[in-house]
Length: 117
Image 1 (spheres, rainbow, N blue to C red):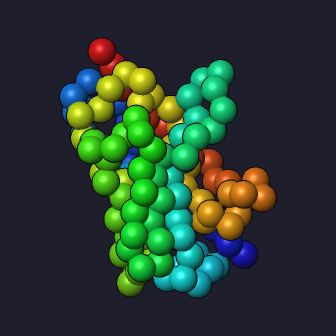
Image 2 (image 1 turned 120 degrees about the horizontal axis):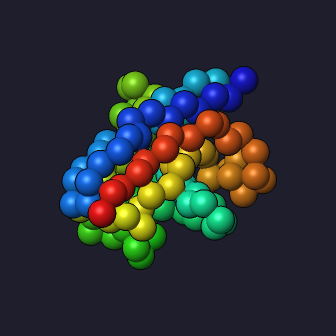
């Protein structure tokens, strides 16, 4: 059974940093492209960043230059380093494989990030 567990969220002031973790089990982690997504209140879930099995990365325009996605295949974990946080980054953050995300399945509980102004 595939399981992805997000952690590392919290309350931070604008300009601060957080590092999110996504621990995966039940999948051949190293071959999967993984994405971080977020959903703010009243808004649709949006893609924040992706990292391929080979380490290639892509970012949404609003986070480019501030967020960094990385992975440790030995630990079956993907990270999202978030710097220069803004109040508009406030959301529940989720990770998922791209394959599951396009089918809208496999979502975990997410981790709440709140940025105060």
